[in-house]
Image (cartoon, rainbow, N blue to C red):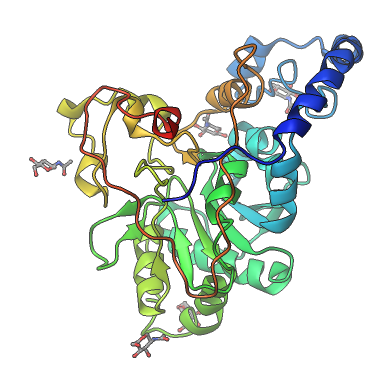
Length: 367
Ligand SMILES: *[C@@H]1O[C@H](CO)[C@@H](O)[C@H](O)[C@H]1NC(C)=O
Ligand SMILES: *[C@@H]1O[C@H](CO)[C@@H](O)[C@H](O)[C@H]1NC(C)=O
Ligand SMILES: *[C@@H]1O[C@H](CO)[C@@H](O)[C@H](O)[C@H]1NC(C)=O
Ligand SMILES: *[C@@H]1O[C@H](CO)[C@@H](O)[C@H](O)[C@H]1NC(C)=O
Ligand SMILES: *[C@@H]1O[C@H](CO)[C@@H](O)[C@H](O)[C@H]1NC(C)=O
């Protein structure tokens, strides 16, 4: 597999850390000032009772600066090189109590963020699609949303990610996974399920990402043809688009990391780390690849989770982007080489399932 050497900016990291210490106190002083000025007087508990809590006191994206002295050189570079349009499947009931919190957490890290609904909402804002609400219309809504995206944003992004309003995604890791692939390769990625579609289909909850060429095929060749993409009223949008992708010769990509661990998940981290197999969680029956539990369940570069309530979105944001064990700075893996159109990475090394044990961490493997 790929060489796991340190990133070449190591010495730069060191230089940066010196200025970080100086900057730290200045930054903290400024952010304290900003936070104390911006804490609004309303009560979170009351907002929750009214079903419209905003958690402004926890994260007001306008006033709490991200850590300005973090070294995000590589993430910033990928943000420019691997442009991702995200669109969120939502509905008028959820604008205020779900979608709003995506915008305030992970959604702001997409290159373009769109909310697809059936009503306007200036706050998000939403794209009003001409589709009635209700589960049974989900498939029609997916098609209308991708048609809109193709018409208005085909040239503004390289990859097109559909997520639900209870999905949480780590955009930096989505870009890292997609980095080697050429956007003109007909491919899509997600959490692959082995059912109904020969090559597998991507479960809807964790979201799925279409390459530019996959989007073009879907909108230009698939949707207009009743033979390639079925034209009916149907709630199983993930299965239908999976069938469509297969008919369009769009490969169902492998979203596992080089270690064979999953990166896109149908439930919250807890359900994958500490699953209750006795409950017959349907995930175990459908997952395309073998899966493990404990720390072996999930990649250190996981991309997305599902059934994430707003409270957990803010918690995830805190755990991923703020909380850090002092003194530990993880080395970056070298970016893989870019692939040509139609080329794919080799499958990861399969490891023997080793239940409830962090058998082989990324760092163990290096030594
Ligand atoms: C939240 O709900 C309360 C009661 O329904 C309402 O008075 C308030 O304006 C709402 N706030 C927002 C930000 O929507
Ligand atoms: C959001 O509000 C709608 C009603 O407007 C309600 O049906 C739904 O359960 C609420 N969702 C959450 C997560 O609170
Ligand atoms: C799909 O069905 C809808 C509703 O019946 C219709 O308006 C539309 O033209 C159909 N599209 C195709 C490609 O047949
Ligand atoms: C998919 O590939 C097969 C075999 O190469 C070909 O016959 C078929 O026309 C292709 N379908 C589309 C929609 O491009
Ligand atoms: C999963 O598969 C097992 C055995 O193959 C079966 O007993 C169980 O009913 C299945 N569970 C679900 C939720 O489909």
